[in-house]
Length: 166
Image 1 (tube, one colour):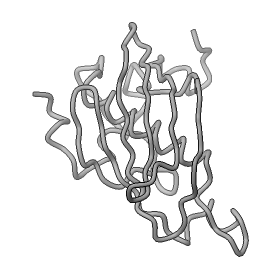
Image 2 (cartoon, rainbow, N blue to C red):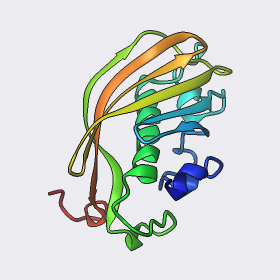
Image 3 (spheres, helix red, strand yellow):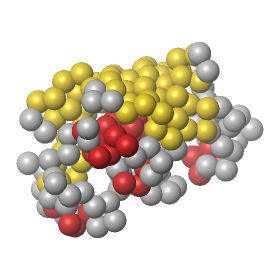
Image 4 (spheres, rainbow, N blue to C red):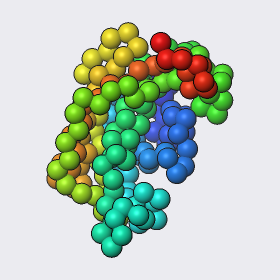
């Protein structure tokens, strides 16, 4: 069993993202090919304040990011090519894990508003080298409000600091 599968309480150990852009609040399930995470939508989030005045909703683009961050946790936990992964110093790591390279489809079927608890389920469908194919969905209570298919890739960290993508 992988070390990270035991660490549900410190999401910072999986992702370089930090507040206010770190969206995943809790890991509920972490398996080899599936992750379930949660996030409570609050009224003071920067993307809620202006989206939309007098009718605040959680933006679809941010829901997409929430799904990809969840998938990034799964990659860091189970498909990390590095023996040591240090989130506090990305220059130390040879790879940047779980970089979004393609959204195949995203379908929105409802809204999330302040006070809603989002439940994100992401499944790993296929791994080809450093490319990971995912499908996921986001629910508020029993209602599915988003369905998404996307791909993440592990890339050289130098690409994040000004190098070119291969």
